[in-house]
Length: 169
Ligand SMILES: *[C@@H]1O[C@H](CO)[C@@H](O)[C@H](O)[C@H]1NC(C)=O
Ligand SMILES: *[C@@H]1O[C@H](CO)[C@@H](O)[C@H](O)[C@H]1NC(C)=O
Ligand SMILES: *[C@@H]1O[C@H](CO)[C@@H](O)[C@H](O)[C@H]1NC(C)=O
Image (cartoon, rainbow, N blue to C red; front, side, top):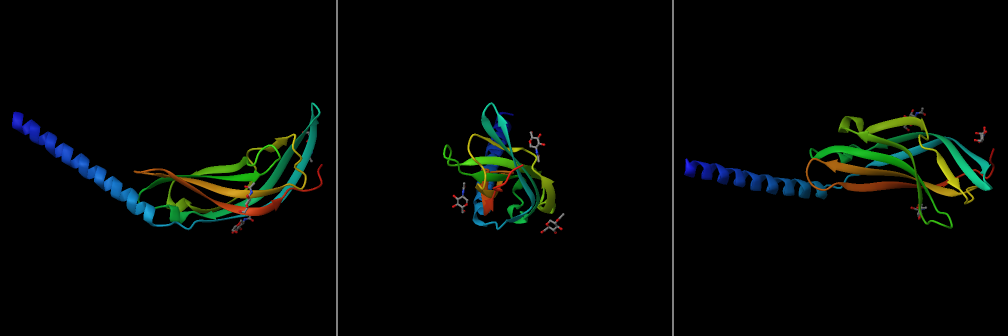
């Protein structure tokens, strides 16, 4: 009885060690392949609306866009899911990075990783105080890969060179 229990324990320890080694190898081999995702955003409309609120200028940006992306290369057997979001990023005198999420989604599998979506900004692109007329901004596609084992990793694609209108309504 005693030795049987001991053996079972030893076997369990061994398999746990093996599992740990396999997981380590999995995340190692996963880090080696370098994914090459692509993203493209076509702006369909971009409207800047300025209103006054307690003597502050409130800038509200409405945009309609067609987001297309191919994130299939982020998926390996070790990928659980991918969280993705598109952000408008711009500089103001106060902050070197202002980031506004325009759209986000969770991609559950490789079959869903190549897509396009025609959407308007889900979260309002709003700024108070700093002047956003003619402001340059980048559209950045960020992703977080949640693996089955190992560490989560994140990366992004920057699409620079967008500009808010000079005119507002
Ligand atoms: C701009 O914002 C004001 C206040 O929210 C609103 O009344 C007006 O209709 C908006 N104009 C446009 C073109 O969206
Ligand atoms: C969005 O872009 C994709 C890829 O560029 C294209 O195939 C699709 O037709 C576009 N959809 C709309 C509504 O423009
Ligand atoms: C926008 O992208 C360009 C080119 O990648 C970069 O130099 C710049 O710092 C970015 N701007 C912001 C506000 O992140």
